[in-house]
Structures are given as C-alpha cells and as structure tokens.
Image (cartoon, rainbow, N blue to C red; front, side, top):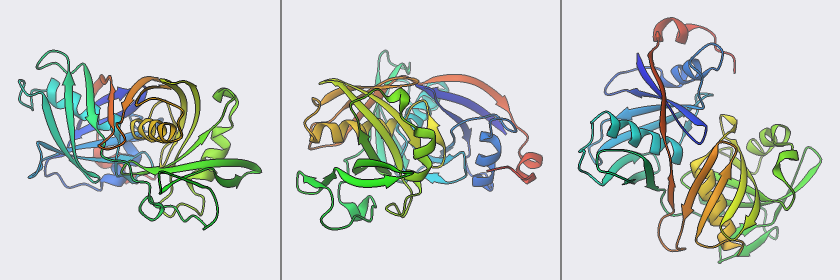
Length: 296
C-alpha cells in the first residue's frame, strides 16, 4: 500500500488513495497509525471517489474509530490532490464529500500551488440533542437561545465549567484564565472524552483567551489523545469564545503545533485557514501487520 504522510500544525495523517479497494480500514488505521509498530499518525485519511463532489474523504482515528469532521485532515487531503495534479490546476475551489456533508476548500496563493488552504467547516450546531450531549435541565447557562455554557462537570476531583458545540463532531470547551501548560490534560482528557454526558464521546479543548484576536488552545482528541493541533477543535473554541463575547469574528488559534485562523460571521459556516505539508511518502505491507494484534 502506497501512502503519503502529511501534517498541519503537527496534526499528522497517513493518506491512502483508497479508490474501490476493500480493506478492514479500522484495523488498518490502528496498525498503520501505531507510533512504534506502524508508520505513526493521529489518523488515516482515505481519498475516495464521489458522485456529488470532486473527491470523497473518510478519516479513521488511530484507535480505529471514524471521525465525522476534521479540518486539518481536510486541508491535508486538498494539499495532496493539488500537488498530485488530481484536481483542476486552474480551480480556485475544490469540493470534498465527508460524513458531515460536502465541504468546500479555497486555495490561497498562486494557481496550481497549495500553500495556505481555507476550508468551510459548515455551520456550528448548538442543540444538545444534536451534538449530542445529555445535559440535565436547570444546569448551565443559555446564550443565543440554545448555546449551553458554564455547564458544571466534575471529573477526577476537578470542577470544570464546559461549553458545548458540534462542528459535525462533538466538542466540549473549558475556558480558563491561567496558562495552559499546567493543566492536567493527560489525566482529565480521557475522563471528559468518555464521560456519561457524551453518548458518542467528545473532543475536549481547554482554552485561554489572550486578546480579542488570539486564543491559546490544547486539545484532547476523541479516539486519538492529545494532539499538537485540531482544526474542528479550533473552530469550536473560536465559535464559543465569540458567542461569549471574548473575541472578534476573526481569531488566531495558537496550538502547540502552530497557528490556525478561524473566521465566523454568526450566520454562515465557519472558515478555517492554515498550512498543510507533506512529511514523507512510503510503502506499507498491509497484510502481515493488520493480522497482528495491535495494542490499544
């Protein structure tokens, strides 16, 4: 199996042109993404044909679960198809079919070269039943009718106030005033991800607002663990911060792996911009490794 490893702000993916190939993709993802026994990555990107868009995309996390949305993965896939000449080199817009719907990508820079890429991430969803999150009536505050914020959750003896939003996948955000470096994300992240509030598990972001156009963020990604960057998580944080009155409609999200730009007008879809690059290419023996027992 030929593959290309790509990354955006340290969020890394292994991309395979799947076509009509039939595989046990969840097991392939667990094997190839393993950092010691495989290539090592946060997720496996499958480039697929589509009857309704220019391309199709599936993303399987390193634990074999499937993600509904992934902004960094989407931009890496667009980078790949442009660099490989699979898309019209004169095109300024590329459409990609995902589980969360059709997403549009716009190239920022010279034609035929994928430098910075902006993708539409769809409209945020705030209704608790659609995120989904099993909130209890009377807890938390409501902003803009349905946005739930300051929802009290206690995990591992720590009391947190969370805000909830879906960017096609579920997110819980905790805003704090102190630096993020001392936040025990490796301990609290798994507990939040698998909390009974979240029937489909959840992506957890801890954020610190630096100014009207800047937020520091760390991410515990569902099915992966702590990652250096997360596109949908960046969008979720920016949307919540805007509704809470912390930031303007354009904001830089500072992640451990780099900076992403998020823009939202409170009406349409959220726009995510940032770099994407190739790390290396290679060939991987599918059969033997997939049949081995891969540790969780």
